[in-house]
Each structure stands twice: as structure tokens, then as C-alpha cells.
Amino acid sequence: GVRFQINAQNCVHCKTCDIKDPNQNITWITPEGGGGPNYVNM
Figure 1 (cartoon, helix red, strand yellow):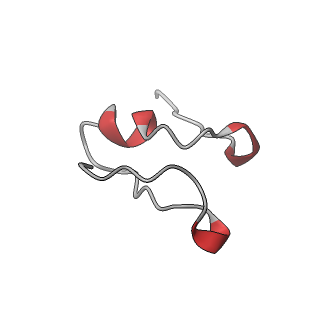
Figure 2 (spheres, rainbow, N blue to C red; figure 1 turned 60 degrees about the vertical axis):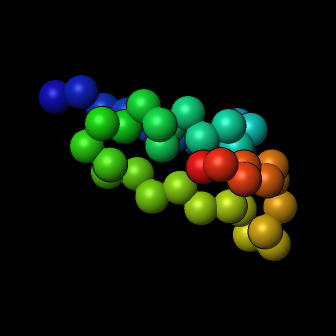
């Protein structure tokens, strides 16, 4: 089957994986320490 792999070390925290996952199999959370962008409307 189709496999969707996310490499955390290459992640820029754009949330595309969360948006493009129609089955909502991905739970997107900010990285350790709470860093990353602040997406107010998402």
C-alpha cells in the first residue's frame, strides 16, 4: 500500500502533513520545548 513517511529532522512545521491527511491519521503537535511557528487559525 501507500506509505506516508515524515522525517522529523527535516520538518519545518508547516502542518502540510496534517492538512493533506484526509483520514486524520496524523496528530500534529509542536516539537519538544514548544518551539516552531504559532499557527493561530489552525
